[in-house]
Image (cartoon, rainbow, N blue to C red; front, top):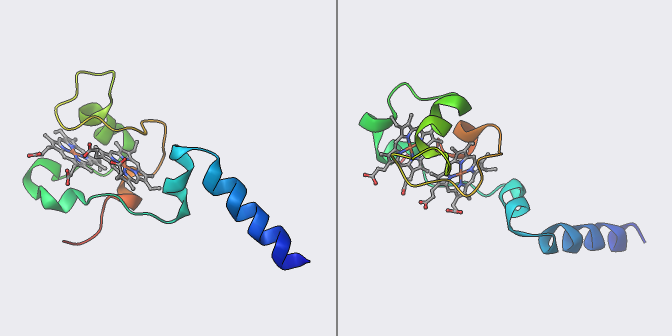
Length: 78
Ligand code: HEC
Ligand code: HEC
């Protein structure tokens, strides 16, 4: 019974649209691929300054500007 509930919850989350899949522990490409560009950038506000899709971005625009904790998902060692 409990297992069924968990399975349904997983299906519901996976089906609920693209943005949420990022929260299932998927890491994005690392900023350390371009260490010079990203030197000193750690805060979400830093990242969005160069990656917000509405802000004339310098880097590739992010599909998920509303996320918090950019660095947490984009800091894998390369
Ligand atoms: C929960 C994890 C997670 C968080 C938090 C997160 N991202 Fe991502 N990001 C990803 C994943 C996974 C991808 C790769 C899939 C994609 O490109 O949509 C990605 C891709 C990107 C890309 C590359 C897009 C491209 O076209 O190459 C940029 C830029 C980016 N994120 C910026 C940000 C910024 C800025 C923030 C904070 C506002 C942020 N991310 C927060 C997981 C995350
Ligand atoms: C000074 C502007 C600037 C800041 C600040 C900045 N970036 Fe970038 N970022 C860039 C540029 C420019 C590129 C493209 C590099 C290239 O393709 O040569 C890039 C590329 C990326 C990529 C794509 C990597 C790939 O493999 O395609 C991700 C993801 C990313 N940045 C995330 C972040 C995150 C997360 C932060 C905040 C911790 C951040 N950036 C802060 C300018 C910036």
